[in-house]
Length: 149
Image (cartoon, rainbow, N blue to C red; front, side, top):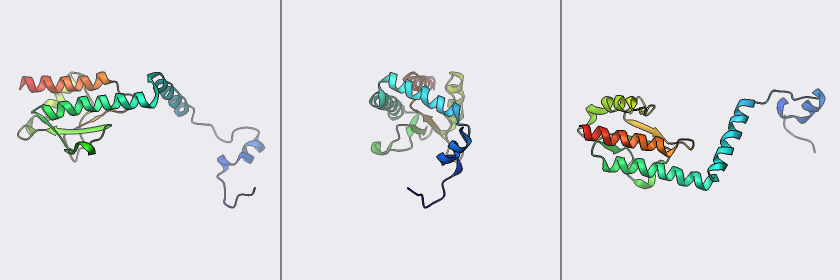
């Protein structure tokens, strides 16, 4: 059939046929990266296994935030908490230790957890590819820091 609206050149199959080639170079690296990521997810057991792993990571970190007297979550309603981006701050009266904790965590190899510059605190991004061991390393830092103070 006929199309009633213009089709972008790179999406028009006639362009490819007329040129006897691809009109544009496909983004090979992103396609390859996506393939490798999907293979990895399949090896882990698929979407259900990743969902279980992500829940385990979130449960581990939220459990520490809720029980450690040095930290508190920024979202108190458990139903509203993110599984991917877990935000927390120093507990009331401990705010002055924020920079010290960030430096301590970095010294233990836990980096990239600084919260947004306008909000402060910390944000642990627990994306699909992050292993449970990385979350455990953060939890260990939180426990060690609290024990040392």
